[in-house]
Length: 174
Image 1 (cartoon, helix red, strand yellow):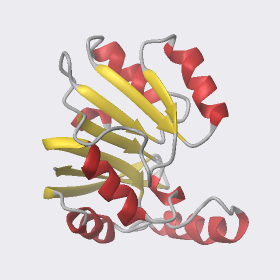
Image 2 (cartoon, one colour):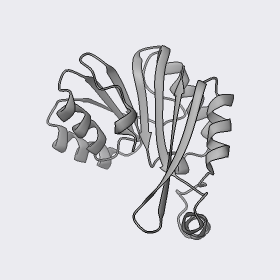
Image 3 (cartoon, rainbow, N blue to C red):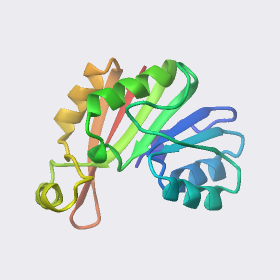
C-alpha cells in the first residue's frame, strides 16, 4: 500500500522510519536503484537483518521515531509501515517526520486500521499482552494527527489485506 504512493525517481532521498528488516527499502531500490535510501529502526537486530538484505544499498541508522537521527529538511519522502502503533507519542513522531522533510516533501504512512472490527479486537489483545504495542488508530484519528503535525493535503484511505487485516495509508505534504 505505501510503496505505491512513494515517488520512486532517480535521486529521491527516502527515509523509512521503523524500517525493520528493510523489505520496503529493498523493493524501492529494486524499482529505482538511483534512489538515496536511509532506514531508521530502534532495534539493532532489525538493522542487522536489513543490512544483510540490502547489501550496502541503503544507509541504516539506529534511532527512535520521536528523535530521528537525521538533519532538518534532508529527505524528499518519509515512509513508515506498520510502526506507528508501537510509538508512544504519535504527534511527536509525526512532527519529527515533518522536520526532516524538505518543503513540499511527502509523508506516506501505512499502519493498522481500527476502522475494522478484527483490528479493534487485536488492538485490545495487544494492549494487554504486548508492552510494545501502544494503540491502533482509526482513519479519522490518523488524518487529524497528521494535519495537527503541520502536513497539508492530507489524504487517508483504508483497505483490507486478506480476510480480516485492515490497513490505512495517509499521505501528506510538508
